[in-house]
Image 1 (cartoon, rainbow, N blue to C red):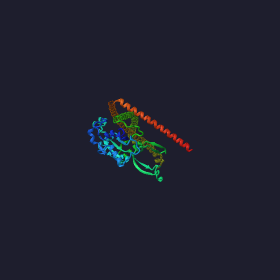
Image 2 (image 1 turned 180 degrees about the vertical axis):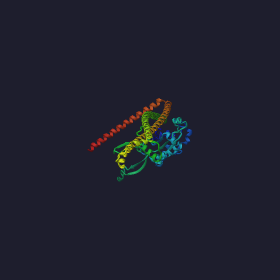
Image 3 (image 1 turned 90 degrees about the horizontal axis):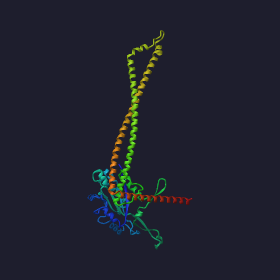
Image 4 (image 1 turned 120 degrees about the vertical axis):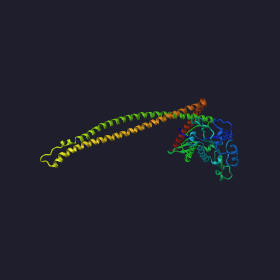
Length: 448
């Protein structure tokens, strides 16, 4: 089973660009770029927050007029709206109860979004339950929908407005004149300095910290069986179709990795099977040898017992005669007892040998039974891995069909673009680290 990842993504919009996203989120279109939208299922979408009859822009204008938020100092084309998309693998919800579980899950996610933005700054929060997951639908044989949450909010920060030097009262210069609720995406999501366990300071992107808070909030609320989104991800927001294609491409890569891992596991199990079989053969030979040795001892014991029963009367001939002047005490101590002691030692030695052989045989039998159980266990594991490999091969074939459906060239272009962007961001990160190192060296040199 592949891992489930919980992800929070943030997209910014201006007043001019928010309209397209609003039509998609609120399902105001008749046709959608995302070909998997099933409008017959749209009534199942859940609104945790809504602007009612107003548009996002109209709601913003109303809040500005009421003084709830401010655009003071912002450019006309500033990004004013944040769209947060909370997402988990479709299979996660199918494994935990489907639609009802998704409603409970995203209701808790909405509470998290309220903590992040403040309830008064959230314009809309909609759980989409009408987007078909074609790959999982084809695999399971019934309609499976991809549940995710769109939250549209205003990135509001408190800004202190201070008296300038032009103030007539010199004593007021520099003091707080008023505190306004300013919309500012850059300040809301500014990178933060974090000190690690070794005391080193690192600059962490705010989105990475958002992922941490989201993951911890949901786990604390009792939702488990999923992992935090990948750290350091540089994925940017694509069009809906491109995003779906990229998801399928990534799923294909994951399936391929799982398939290779399954093949490696099969190879390891085969090697272990051979090793266990060799150990089993060795134990069987040792057991057979011990059984033969025991079988060879049993007749000796039986012969000894038969000899003792049939010839007990002859022992009288072995008893030495007493001397004419020998006392009974001396005769017993010096002739009879030494003979009895020798016979006793012979039979005790034979008895100890039999016990030792029996113990060894029991030990070997236990080892043999354990080896047989281990062999059966590994055979069962091998069969399961072979079955899993077959399923993964089927998934891989299905995803190749998806690639053909969307077109290989388009997918290759998207992948190439993503790789180039990741390379550029990585180069920028390394350059920033180098600058930080140089700054620290200069600081240490100046301190000396």
